Length: 175
Image (cartoon, rainbow, N blue to C red):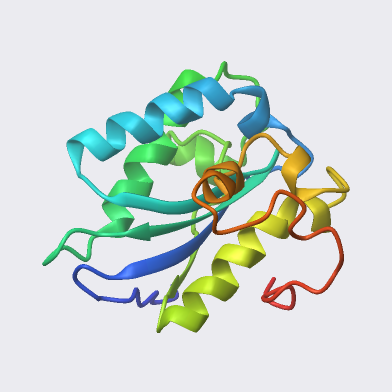
């Protein structure tokens, strides 16, 4: 069995990609209110800051900053994924292994994380996640995707409303 080594950076800032098991499903946007509730409750139980986020139908990208002295993002993700799955009606196809373990077939078991190294790395990842709905063909303008922190960034003056209207965006080569 593979040994997965997670980054241990107390108080660190991390970029995550978390994906549904069945990529054709649209559970995240179809159940956006439930997902928001799960995130809010998870942040109350074990605080963290969501610096940037985009929710697509079958996956999400986000950047979190953990509290000083805390490096445990894995427990937070387990909590979010389990509680979201509990909110969704059963009906997904289950493998023998998932049946044996009593698992739902909503999420891919693992997630991808990257430690943000510096300000430039942070900016590239924020740009990348905000541009993702355009990249995947869900909208033609970043501003047209409702499930994104992009709108918060526009309100703060970080982005112009028409940002990302062309393909000259930092971070596009990441995924």
